[in-house]
Length: 154
Image (cartoon, rainbow, N blue to C red):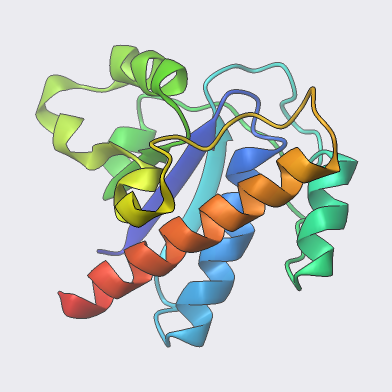
């Protein structure tokens, strides 16, 4: 495993949060050589920084999202990345449309790595308040811990 991509709809809330969290957890586990990126299934925010609320809540936990910029998921991502992890079923469906059939095994939900968390998905916090952004962080941290543990067992 050399390259991991996380994705959501607009790439301004959930997936940049997951990118920052995963990078930090991989570095702490001495797996910092693994490339991590994020993308969105829709191009609404291409070039924009993460949502200010995502940045603020992430910063409270020690994650810096400020340098990240939104980009759109492409078919080439399924060739480049070894693992492509979505935040919810709707975005997973969108990604399947782009994904070549021979690369479908690379496509999963991020929460597959935290079955004990009690949620199959990371819900979109965009239209909600602070508690929703904290919930995203809780779920993403649990899933990233599970992913790092899985990578260490390989």
